[in-house]
Length: 196
Image 1 (cartoon, rainbow, N blue to C red):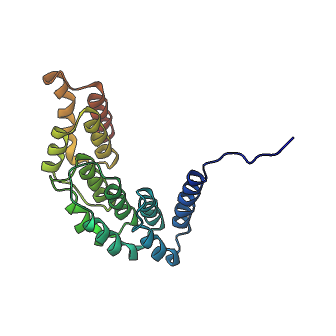
Image 2: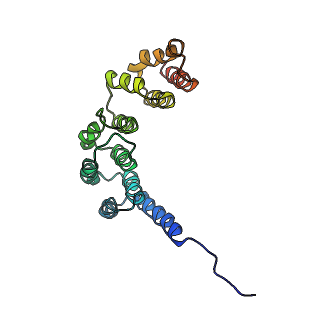
Image 3: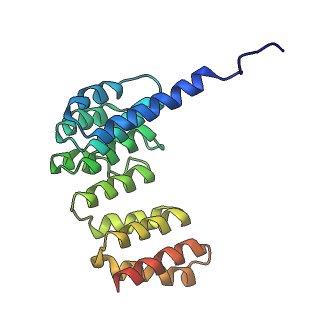
C-alpha cells in the first residue's frame, strides 16, 4: 500500500497556528512582546491585527495605549460594523489605563456604528468611568431589540444604579410598543433585578 500525504489546507492550518501564537504572546504579559504585537496591528490580513489587539489587551502593557490609540484614529471613519475598530476599543479598555479615555470617547460619537459605540461604552465603563443618561437613552432608542437587551445587560453588569429608572422604563416599553421583543423585556428585567 502506498502512503499519500493527507490533503490539508496548509494556509488554514498556518493561520490558526499563527493566531494561537499571537494570543499566547499576550498571555505572557511581557513588555518585550508589546513592540512585536504593535507591528502585527499593521498587517494586511484582516484577522491578524484583531488577534494582535486582543493579545495587547491581555498583556495589559500601558505602553501600548499610545500606538493602539493612534491605530484607532488612523482607521477610516465609518458607520459600519468594523472588527478592527472594535478590537482596538476593547484592547484599550482591557489595558486599563485612563490615558485611553480620549480615544475611547471619540468612538462614542453618533457617526459610528451602534456596535462600535456600545463597545466604546463598555471600554469606558471598564476604566471606571460613567456614561451619561443622554447616551444611554440614545442607545436604547436606536438599537434593535437584541441590541437593546444586550446593552441593558451591560449596564446592569456594570452596576449602573443611576440608570435604574430608564431600565424600568424598558419593561413598560413592551406594553407601549408591541413591536419590541421578549429579548428587550428579558434584558431589562435582568438589569432591574440586578440593580434592586
